Every structure is written in C-alpha cells, then in structure tokens.
Length: 96
Image (cartoon, rainbow, N blue to C red; front, side):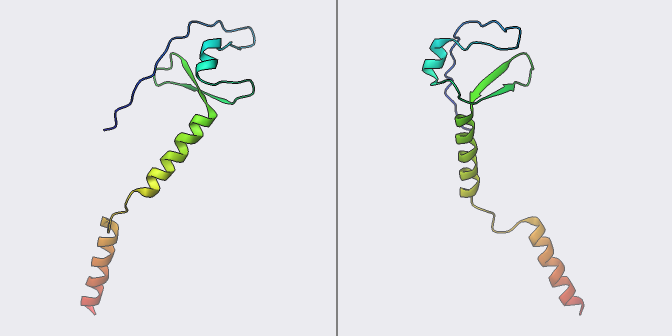
C-alpha cells in the first residue's frame, strides 16, 4: 500500500455570491500557484457535503502517471481464458 503525505491547509472561509462565485483566498492562490485563467476541476466527495477544486494541470499529470504505470506493469504470461482455449484446442485434436 502506498502512503500518501497529507498536505492539508485551511485557508479560511469564503462566501458564495449571488451567481455562485467564490473568491479563492490570496494565500491559497499563491501557495497553490493558481492564476487568473487557470482551469480548475470542481469535484464532490463521496459524502456530498462539500466540493474540492483541483488544477486541471494536476489532474492531467495524475492521468499521465496512471497511464505510464499501467503500461509498465508486466502482463501475465497466460490467463485463464487463454489456458481454457488451449485446452479446448488440444481436446478437439484428441477427438479427431
């Protein structure tokens, strides 16, 4: 199991405006390098009690790393389906 270092920080509270907008606190924008025009994913957790914003660049990096990890995994030499197919072929040859 991979341990993850939690880098959690409470930057304060924000109020949702009439149009659903929030202002990300300046300290959070500075520390997380969030600039005007940056794309953010807005996601809800499993408990549906709040939302999380994640920079699109970070999500892309995560997706790319996941793809690299999947490609680097060794494929099993044979699986149950292939073994079963081979046995069926051998049985057909024996019946002939």
